[in-house]
Length: 172
Figure 1 (cartoon, rainbow, N blue to C red):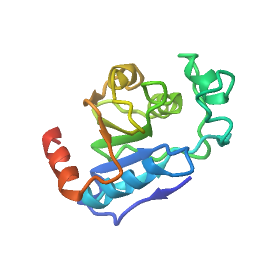
Figure 2 (spheres, one colour):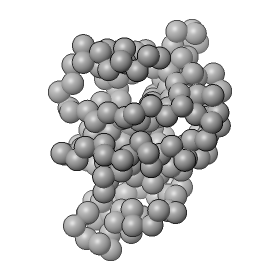
Figure 3 (cartoon, rainbow, N blue to C red):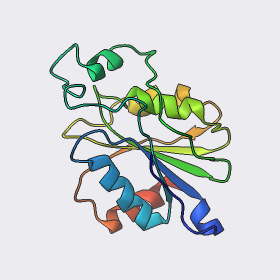
Figure 4 (cartoon, one colour):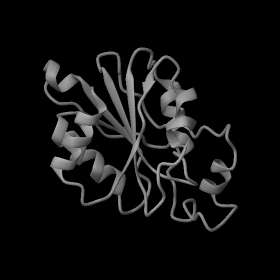
């Protein structure tokens, strides 16, 4: 688990970026770090209690762990370690790869494990080509009392200017 907290300064305590990055390329981690650098956010890596192997991530195999989890809407993979104290954050960004056109169920585990009442939740994703689709709608029930903004899919080449533009469009 990685938890990078910036100086205890109100400017830096406004945003938390919680992300799940399972593939060897670590694309979601890299985008999360770019966003954190642009907006001065703290970072928290959502790490599964049981790490995913390459075979677990084989979406072409209907018996792979990720396929089995994604075919069960009630699946909630366990998270390793302690969750961050999100009480002092106004906005929680949640980053993940798109799996089967929605967020991996470990994201629901994270959202359901945190008290997000009166917080803003901003999902964002990485994908080899799949759009966000209905991802945000699928996440909203896992964050009762939170304002869940529409999410955005990022490419690896996103510039700080594009990230700033996206943040400005959120009105947060």
